[in-house]
Image (tube, rainbow over all chains, first blue to last red; front, side, top):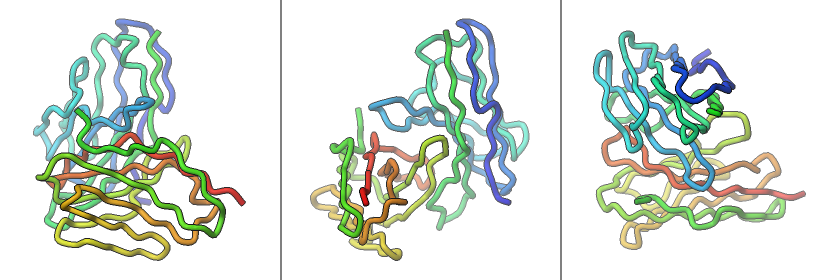
Length: 114
Length: 111
């Protein structure tokens, strides 16, 4: 089954404790992206990657890092989480190509930073 | 600054009637528009899209209309069903990849 998986699905942590949210896709997609969803703000892009070793900032990259060492994985790293990073996070992927018009989203990771 | 705006946070419609969800955008460079549907505890799923070279696209009960001069698009669901109750996000792109999302409209279809 074609899917995007995220782990963990739920996480409660404390300020300053480094954490990583993993994202993996089995569709051999080149493009991967991270979004956060906050009440009243919709989904906002954090970082994206066009291919292995190619990453770039989205609209709200502050406080986050990413890496793309393998095509299927795109982890989101919070080196020193703060309460304003409490949010619902979605990973997404899509193939590159002229007719690409959809992104496939993971189920989401709900993060609470105390 | 929000480039894609969904000004109605919620909408309630009776089963069998038409649901109309609206979306406005400010960036004239956007050339691809999409609607995503999201159920609680799940990721958004693609619903329907439209290219800027078209003004209408249909897929079953779902139709998206694009008015480029007004920078406005709408999603029509006819007839609405209780299973359509979800949050609908409008999104726009000019790179083909980076999506700019609206804040979403929560649709409730009542029996």
